[in-house]
Length: 633
Ligand code: PRX
Image (cartoon, rainbow, N blue to C red; front, side):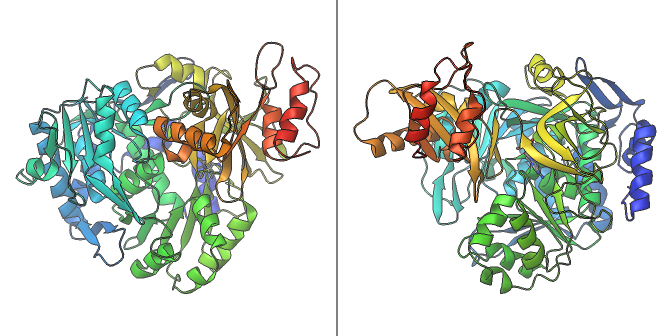
């Protein structure tokens, strides 16, 4: 597979990918094992939308991630599992061992009645069994839907029901930092809310603490898996068969299930992995994301394994048992490529340089960031303190929907610019448009970021609701995929992501819909209406600011705030808890009844110098009340 090493190679590859996309991607795809070659490379129509890559091709992604490496690198570590507690020994899965574990698990799933096309939901901490389980699904053609284990029972139940999953795979408990979290209990609660499609809960024994056991549904992972054969024929999958669903938030309604399929996703995840991280034989690569998010899917599970890489999977948190834990792990394994989120960088930066200076980080060749805009101070710190000025930073922009990295520097190829995601990868045809959909040409311009040609890992649909996929991404601007982000193209033609232009906020790199948080807050019996906006937060990137109208006066404000936070925790999870809750008597509304969020955002950001035109408001007097209620007057 092409690994770009010079700027000329990048330019040539990019040009070829635009002039002859089918030829370009066919060349990359040819480096994989196909059970039957494709008949046609691409068919697409963004109006519907209908995108198909490698039509008629048959494959199994796990044969490409596992079987094809057995001969050449069977004894090489595929996954190095570093536990939460540094005093516990790491677990290493070689490619051979991982292959055997995946086959055994796949056989167990079959034995439990799982067939191609069935959906399986995962609710697990970062343990190797999560990666093994996901790959076992792919082995037999079951569709995995991983739900981040920080989500609440309600959020889990919603996702199980939307996907009509037949099975949940979970752990008993989870040790994360100092916390001991009852994971299966959340699954039990979700099922008690009504998840009729669930036939089995497969429980992985992680800590071995006491559990409630439901003999009708619950089965132990070890009882089902351990006795199985280490051979499992890989299901023949069509390129366009579903590989997984991953739920993500949008500006309206409940989270939607983004669907990725087998062929294109495999090609793009591997291509982007090899190029963005410049992975070389024997390198040790570490992505700190959770497999509950797309970054973990593409850059812990599929991309690195398909590329035959050795990667680290970490159970814990960056600050436990001390603030140097990340760097200690980098030193311990002599990590060569390190990929994390700006939030983590900012949090560690705030804890002081001594924690990073203690460790030998000279092995690091590439540093990556993802998930949210990185500010200049954090970029510089990452560059100087972690990379010692020697490790290029790849600021990678992409989304759950894009399946893989889209805009990024290529290490030692692209000229870096702090806070710029810089250039598109080959195959990614970007454009900026104005609100009327006119393409903005030239450089030194800003606009709405769109993509005008399909890349192999583009989402295919939103599960169970194709129309929602069309209206969300493809109806805003004709023949373009709309990202929801605004971006600037500078005088050198490099891209800087400004952030979401819709009602999506990004809190510690976690994507959330303001409507989703509002719906949760509105569940509180005293709340009549609420409006949620993001505001700049030093560590989290964005914090959550909630304005609420209540039906009765509240005497104990502190208790009320706690109650609202608890409702959000129950409905969504702790990650969606508002940082600030301001009680107001009304919300600024236009004559058509729309909340003027612009004003709310300004107040939340403590920036009231220019509130713009408020004369069109139905209730202009409310603005002053909100400003003084926020303590700004
Ligand atoms: O706003 C962009 C931001 O994260 C959004 C996608 O979130 P999600 O689907 O959860 O995927 C995150 C991990 C791929 C984008 O619409 N975002 C992602 N990466 C960057 C970013 N914003 C600025 N710079 C980035 N590098």
